[in-house]
Length: 90
Image 1 (cartoon, rainbow, N blue to C red):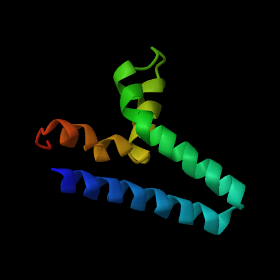
Image 2 (cartoon, one colour):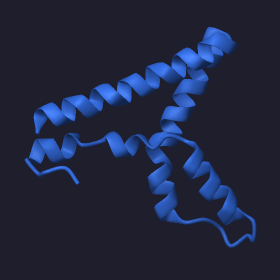
Image 3 (cartoon, rainbow, N blue to C red):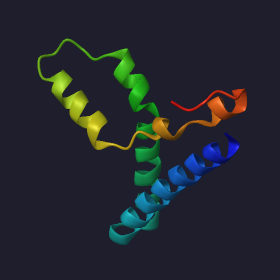
């Protein structure tokens, strides 16, 4: 189980490095850092924002769905808690 958690940590790190390399090719180092950090934060919190729901505006639901689908969900790579408690992965 610990090896599986280590593998998922490595995958998450590889995705973050790929995003950083993508942004560093087209922007300055500071903007690449900000864009990569922003996408990481959005990717970690997208599932909690999805559970919180949206407003009752007519066009808000489609925009929220599009935003959730277009960003990487880093929460899918989070199996460390399951490995720490000895639970099998989903």
